[in-house]
Image 1 (cartoon, rainbow, N blue to C red):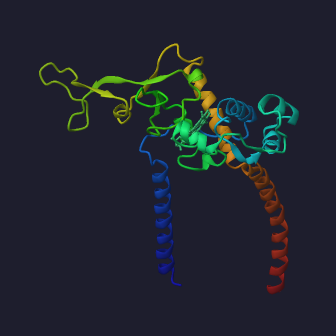
Image 2 (image 1 turned 120 degrees about the vertical axis):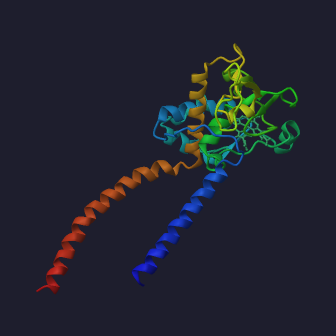
Image 3 (image 1 turned 180 degrees about the vertical axis):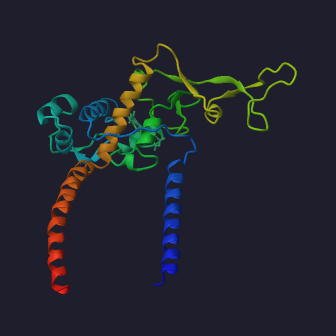
Length: 281
Ligand code: HEC
């Protein structure tokens, strides 16, 4: 193959990789609502333990984690089996080797919520990943037109109640006077008074202009906004871990593989030197 052909080929491969990457990120943002970023840290055991505690207390009754066993989670999170059974598992019939299932009856759930709560074991691998979970749990707001009195900015007309409302409090959509945009993209001013011309925007419309669409009704939650973000971070981190527990092993084994390659290189190099001697005699 000539070097020109090779060049063209390489450029085509690079272009298709870029295209592929583009379509993956475009899909992640499918709802159109911007996701807040969280950086998972599966080596932060304290965070994972707190996340699991929140999950068992506030989510497990509705959402199972049926592709994972309690035992594996206990081991990975550094929680002794007996402590796990005593403090984190509320069904006394559960054994440490059991799958993390619940007793939610699907047909009843459909009647109660309009949709059955999905199993969340693999959820962090879907949609926008842990960013989605992190944003979703901070996007509930009061909406009296919905059966359970809440709605969600990320998931319109969601069937789920705001499970963490006693911690976060209840959010409401806000309306704000913001500067009207001029044709050139800047803020519009009145040519006579030179004051900003404002318009009232509410809820989602504020997002595009960089304002927060929701605010917490004071005194309705037991945690501050920062504390609540931490709770949701830990929860999303835990669900990220459970989406692929083997990640923990992979990074550990990766180091051994690199060490082995470094070690092997020495011998490969020595062998290569011997061969080299043969044909330059
Ligand atoms: C009272 C039952 C109940 C509780 C408690 C509950 N959920 Fe849900 N959840 C649901 C239902 C029902 C749905 C399906 C909603 C729909 O499809 O409209 C759902 C959907 C979801 C989804 C999917 C959203 C999507 O975009 O597909 C996620 C993620 C989720 N819940 C996370 C949680 C977490 C985390 C907790 C704990 C803090 C929790 N849920 C607590 C009932 C519950």
